Length: 101
Image 1 (tube, helix red, strand yellow):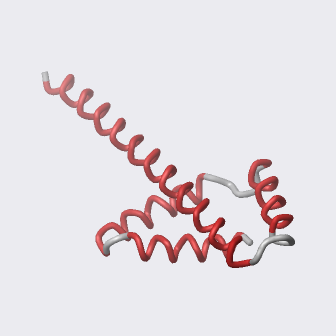
Image 2 (cartoon, rainbow, N blue to C red):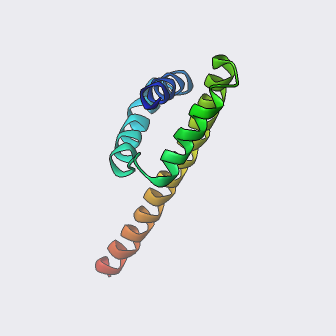
């Protein structure tokens, strides 16, 4: 299921981004993937629920649901990362201006 999610995720990234944004987003995604483990209690619960749902709904519907969840989670993670980077830049600017005086 994880490899399927990753495949859908990469396909969505390819479709949604321009060539310039792809490298930037890939770097962000790679860093997030390294920092966020998938063996958390929340992930195990989510994976279990998706497996249970897959017994009752058509695979196409499950794929659409998975794609929507991944797109939403990716967007939220990307926004959080970018906000953190903006905060860091502001902090560094503030420190640099104090040093310059």
